[in-house]
Image (cartoon, rainbow, N blue to C red; front, side, top):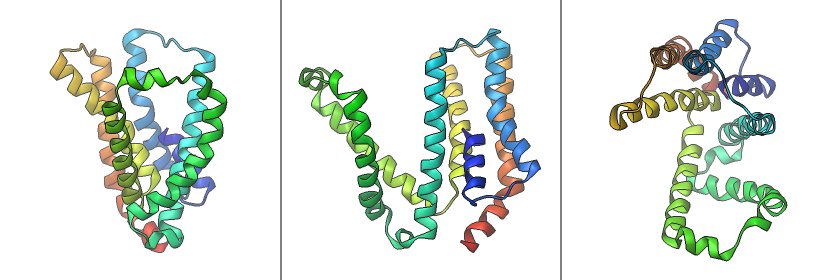
Length: 203
């Protein structure tokens, strides 16, 4: 995902290509799956699912980059995160409705709502709303690439927490992969953090 975010950012003129930066992002993105592969010896993937996952990652990279452009280079930059959510999320919902009607609506039933529970669904809605507002707030100050990079390493913290709290086994290869990703992320922000600030200031 960070590699796709970087490529999309270059295509949309949000970033300039830098070889050192590219290698650092590849290190962050590749160390975790390589560690998993070394632990288990294989990856089991379904081709259709893998294709959908790649397409979803590309679309998400474009979505975050476009939101960054809207929050930093357009009239929406002057709006509060809540107001920006009102406009951008409404447009996003309009784009998602046709896909929902085509792929998911036929499988939805009223009984499913009561089976899951109205309270649980309402809490999900509240959490999604807060996450959206937070995303628009953050993307007004940092780049979409930074969010992608932090999101990639966030999984490492969740895996480590699960290992410590639930006793889930982590192989030495996995520990090494997560450690490399964290160190590479630290180097990235230490090495390129100032250049991100200068770039945002020029927008």
